[in-house]
Length: 192
Length: 192
DNA sequence: TATATTACATAACACACGTTATATAAAATA
DNA sequence: TATTTTATATAACGTGTGTTATGTAATATA
Image (cartoon, rainbow over all chains, first blue to last red; front, side):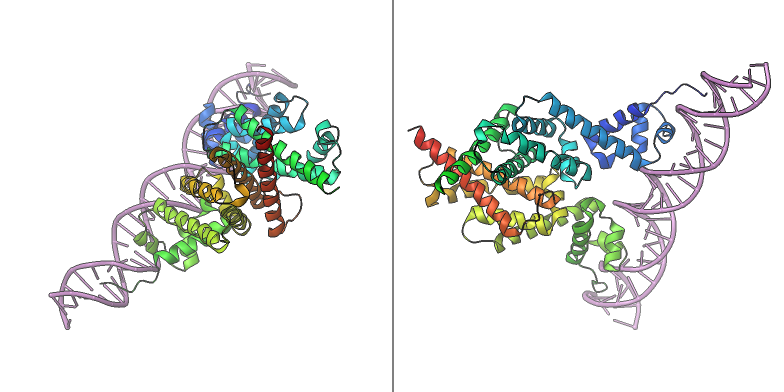
């Protein structure tokens, strides 16, 4: 009982997302969101208790987008998929990438680390990684996560020497993965 | 002709640095700086035209600190030195690291890239890297810069799985460097 | 010594912000 | 139809911000 709802939670988060995408999360204001929707700030406060609650919902949305990328890049190779999704996120949402990954964001911190055990399990079944101990697999994974993060940061910052295409970036990623795996293989057979 | 100066440019930048170190550059305000110095905002405006000029001077100071770290870590091996300095900066000034490296900071962008030619020259004289073409050296350097950035970001964010000591981090860095170099060496001899 | 300069304190201005009080009109309900 | 509910608009409040106007006292210069 009351007038028809003109502005939904989703619309509000949409508007906030658009602002965050270009200006960063810290530069979101209630008035900017309202202006983007063509409304006053009143509908925002009907749908969200305060700014904290709104930003929380926005961060969930952003994480949803990044998970969507992971689904879209899914090929069955978890290494490849994570790298591809991370690079796409860094390329297509560079401002949000910096906001989420480079600030000490607790949402993302857990999300990333919760995937590690699953990745290790996947690695165990990879024929290319046969014969490695779990500790060795963990070292390989850690190195690749570090490299992938560094590459994504450079992409988001635009600090790579050339303008690489997505495929060229993936090539660097898999080339370095090969470096790490090959080297681990060699030092393994050498110590025998 | 006028009263004795009580607050110098250096003192002002010092105060700004202290705030930036814990709260980040974006949370610096004129009043906070004044309060930290026990003054009003007037001395700041005597020494700096406006906030932009002050932040500019602060960024120069921060870059100076990072360069000082590079000097302190100097051992003659430029690979090692850059990695060590970058890791120390990420560990000891994590907030500033995020502010400078992860924002799209044009100061830092140039500073980092201007070092590449010198590093390539150094690599040419490294016996361990003998026989590589310049393009191959560039690829090796790029991979290491990416890895070093990723590692530094993880350090600054506290997202590494364990609490690594500085030495353990350096070990990962040099281990990966060996991986990349060894692999490059092998694919070179294979194609012969 | 008188004057001019200037480093600083104080206080104000204009603005943007989060949030809230009040008003209004539309829909549901009685 | 009269009443209640509520989604929205408008406008205000308090706070923090960058910046500036004004006043004051200390120093150098004449």
